[in-house]
Amino acid sequence: MAEANQAAAPIKDERVREMSPLRKALIRPELGAICGTIVVFLFFLAIARDSGMFAPEGIINWGTVAAQFAIIAVGACLLMIAGEFDLSVGSMIGFSGIVIALMTVQWGFPAWFGILVAFALALAIGALNGFLVIRTGLPSFIVTLAFLYILRGLTIFISITTTRKTIIGGVREASEGDPIAWLFGGKVFNGLFVWLADLGIVDTFVAGPKAGQPVVEGIPMLMIWALALIVFGHLLLTRTKFGNWIFASGGDAQAARYVGVPVNRVKISMFMFSAFCATVFATCQVMEFGSAAADRGLLKEFEAIISVVIGGALLTGGYGSVIGAALGALIFGVVQQGLFFAGVESSLFRVFLGVILLLAVILNTYIRRMITGER
Amino acid sequence: MSAPLIELVDIEKHFGPVIALNGVSVSVKEGECHCLLGDNGAGKSTFIKTMSGVHKPTRGTIRVQGAEVTFNSPRDAMEAGIATVYQDLAMIPLMSVTRNFWMGREPEKRFGPFKMFDFHTANKVTLSEMAKMGIHLRSPDQAVGTLSGGERQTVAIARAVYFGAKVLILDEPTSALGVRQTSNVLATIDKVRKKGIGVVFITHNVRHAMAVGDRFTVLNRGKTLGTAARGEIKAEELQDMMAGGQELAALEGSLGGTI
Ligand SMILES: Nc1ncnc2c1ncn2[C@@H]1O[C@H](COP(=O)(O)OP(=O)(O)OP(=O)(O)O)[C@@H](O)[C@H]1O
Ligand SMILES: [Mg+2]
Image (cartoon, rainbow over all chains, first blue to last red; front, side):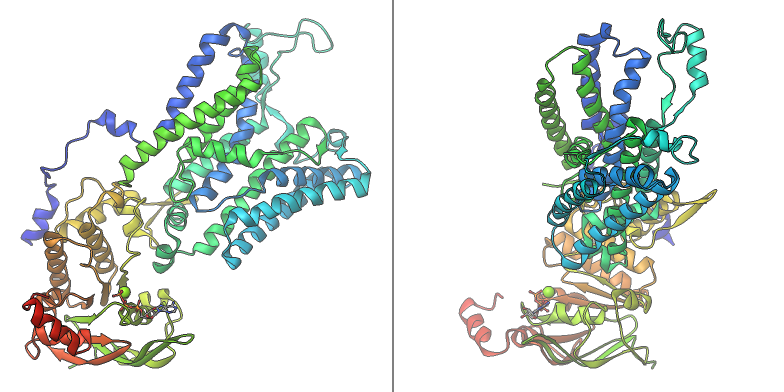
């Protein structure tokens, strides 16, 4: 038993330098995204402070855009950590939106039914994506690229053959008073903003039909979805058994299989989750605009992947952070809307984004090597 | 004397036209270290993959403690108490030691309606199991990639032992290691054997085999050349059998007996 006693006492290894708590706290997968976020906020505080960007309605403005990115980034993040890509996210957004609009406006079903059908179809397509990747052993890059075209083509085709248009309006009217639709298109905490307006913290409309009401009506449900998905994704990944399986499936699928991790099930469910997130995005967008368009969601898959990579995930899987991906989405949203507030040419958006992407990824690579001992 | 922990009789394995194993029989007893020797491509890895349920044998029988079994998956073999540390796939370097240690068998704790990974227990057990094997981790959330090759092997061995392995299969655990790390792994094998676990130790280094082995089986081009107990056979004889006879003996003469 001497051995056990000896084991209990922590032994100092003379070859391991003590790490300061600060250093330890800094060395984390999200560091690149944290630094990026700080840089971006400092930048806009310097150039656009008086533009209203940091007033409540300004915050709602870029917050909404960031929340949109975040919703699809969470799905892309977990899938990428599980070792796969989904390039069909953008097409899935267009597809789900058109499904909802067709069901409710064209065929007269209640909105809740249309939304449920859209989610069911999306989950089925996500599962099919995953199934094909597992069965064929092809890279998910190729399989989901095929679905990028298939879904987009189908969406436009269905929309044109049934309505002769690629934009279907009237969804808001059709979903008036629906028990589920407000979950995606509604706003919450309206009372809070009325109160804040009374205190003079939030401006009110001075003229027009809404005179006297606060300029910020409430927090859009889109933001609530983003927060809920971020919290869910983060807890799932870092605090559950399933999260460990996600890391293992992406880190080394074969090694994971040998110890009994159901790698196929993990990957397929992550494809389904990615499709789920795309449909949340689509439903919120349809409810907000009151219409669906067959070309919605173009290039969204890349924006999601970029957010995830800024957030410190490894493109080859097995490593990453949902919090990082959410910060990546925040950077994306702030930069896109911020340049508009600052009155800068919007093409500069891309230049700035490219620079941030590069810097964050360089920093991430450096940090990751420190954490994982990769060479 | 009870039945061997595991017994494989006349195992054949074909991969299409390739005959990787052509009638191999091996048994492992409680508390012994059975060394499986053989040159590259002799079929050692294929043989232990049959033993651990990765491959199904084309022909032959497997008995666990006297009873005939068929393994349909690695999971079946694991449940029968057969744990394997693979040559190339022991650990996932990007993940922490704790995450690797518990991979596939994560302990859970209830939080209201949710079940969460119980990191508190997991970290504690990982640290103490590693310490029993003589490795003192900086922290349980250190990535496996930051460990040395020998330490990685030890994590994998500690994991197998902790989860109640009766037979522990090690595929060339020492092949990539330096002198000190090799002796650490050999010492670990000795500790494991003393717990009554049967160890299958695969190597093509005769000296490593002689250091810990109780019995030795040599594979050559998919066949066994018989099993010998410790003391019945000399290192040079094993070396010769591995090489399949004469050429090496001749070569050895010209190199002055250094291989
Ligand atoms: N999945 C497979 N398909 C076809 N042939 C295979 C397969 N696996 C192994 N083989 C062949 O079977 C033979 C034995 O291979 P095995 O990996 O068992 O050798 P080994 O003794 O472990 O060698 P090493 O010392 O290099 O690890 C080789 O000729 C190999 O090419
Ligand atoms: Mg081998």
